[in-house]
Image (cartoon, rainbow, N blue to C red; front, side):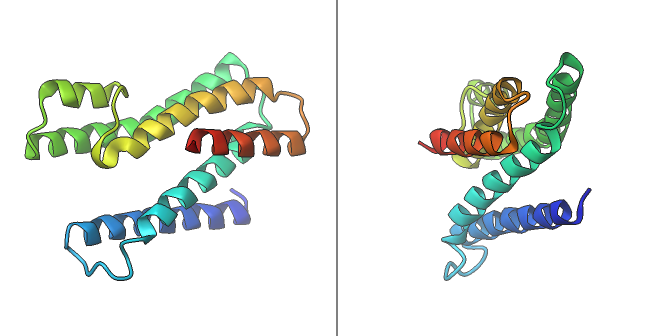
Amino acid sequence: MNDYKLGLAGLRGLAACLVMLSHMALYNMLPSFPILGFGVIGVMLFFVLSGFLMGSLYLSKPANFSSVSGFVNKRFARVYPLYFVVLVLFGTAYGLSGFEIFTHLVFLDGQYVFWTVLVEVKFYGLFIILWLALQGRSERTQFITLLGSGLITRI
């Protein structure tokens, strides 16, 4: 991994820590001032950096069955196991119904702190579509398209 990508990955980790600290402040585990507002900044920074890193890793590769399925497998392996465990523990602790847990597990619902995972999974699908559509396009066109898609998914 290039030095700048390693630095950006570290910044993404910092963004995740900001979100965690904000949640801890929200539930009175930490003082709320000034931490509480950092969660929103952390989420936005995390998503922007994740999109940039995904683009820099994958857009230069051909969007064929092998590379797209590799992308999907890596995303699934990174997100789903921990999501499953946390969701089941959270659902059990907070008395969610089996149906509520199920709708989260199959990404039909995204309530509580789990809304970000639903957004992330939707972006993965959009990223694959853009990856296929941007084959052979200039880096500038790729950047503008991805930036626009990030703005659209925020609306």
